Length: 313
Image (cartoon, rainbow, N blue to C red):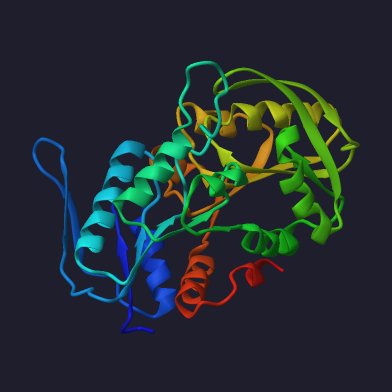
């Protein structure tokens, strides 16, 4: 396997890629991704990859357009170098929230990105916690959607089990919250909210009994943290004892960190699909769990043509 697999990295999340390679017991593929003075992206692959199984790891997080372009150019470079199969490993799939026409004359950008990845040369996609599962149907190539649940569950079981209540931040996240509540044998609650405009929400009320409970809010993305902070206040008003939160993708843009620090949330558990930057690095409330082992195991199974769904049974 070691002689036939090559893992390459863009500039979005080098630490995660290095951890994946460490778990695979292989060296990171030799490549250089840089910009010309006019900001055009340039890629050089310094390995012979003819007939090899290639995995390009790149989250399309901030700066989203630059990171997406790096991924597309790397896909094209490896395709033209006669790779046998190219897998785009996208720990955080940006533009996933634009998955439908929410109003007239708006794009479905998630579908556009799917088309771009396919045309650029991806033979399959490996990602984690797609914001909307139906995005897999936007692709005409295989898509493996991983879940952070095994990593998060291990952490929760070690720290928070007594009087635990899993909370969905909205009606759309109930299925995700239930997937956590069932193995933990925890209660389930829902934050009923009304979103007035993008990145803003008004919490209406709590569905479920949270009085005296340790409430764990489960979400896939925390962006500006408006929903998270206001939801935490609503839970405290409803009688919750402690508030914790968990998300797979810590986008944490704009006022997110100040909102988290000023909220009743005691701890925000995130994964390393997106690297923390700026004020987030110094936020004592944030705990980072690594999903490198999950991605490494998925890469092994793709290479050996084994089942990936077995990882989550």
